[in-house]
Amino acid sequence: MEDDTLTAALDTATTGNNPGLRAASGVGPDTTAQPLVTAGGNPDRLRTEASFAGLCGVAPVSASSGRTNRHRLSRGGDRGANSALYRIVPVRMSSDARTRDHVARQTAAGRTRKEFIRLLKRGDRPGDLPLPHHTGHRPGRLG
Image (cartoon, helix red, strand yellow):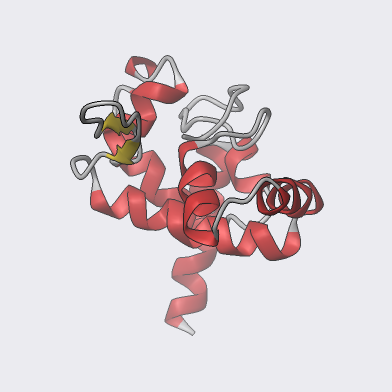
C-alpha cells in the first residue's frame, strides 16, 4: 500500500518535471527520477547529448593505440544514471518498434548485443529520449 502511494507520488513529480521522458516507451517513474536527479538543480548546463552522456558515464573515450581506432565507454560519471539507462535499453529493445528496427539493422551490420546496447545507451539513434529537463519536454536524445 505504501509502495503504491510512493510510486504514484513519484510518477506525478517526474511527469510534471519532464513529461517527454516519462511518456517514452519503457521509462517508468523510478527510471525517470534518476536522470532528473543526475541533472540536478541546473539542467540547463546539459545543452547537448554529449554533456549528459559524460555525466552518466556513457560517453565514448578513445582507446586507440597504433593503427587501431576504437572507443570504450567512460568509467566516470553517475553510476545510478548509467544503471537507469541500462534498465531502459532492454525494455525498449523488446517493446519499442523503432528500437527493434534499429537493433535489426545493427545486427545485420554485424554488431553484437553488447555493442548495440552501448550504442543505445549513448543515444546513437535520432529522436530517441529527451534530455532530462525540469521545465518540460526538450527535443533530443538521452545519451
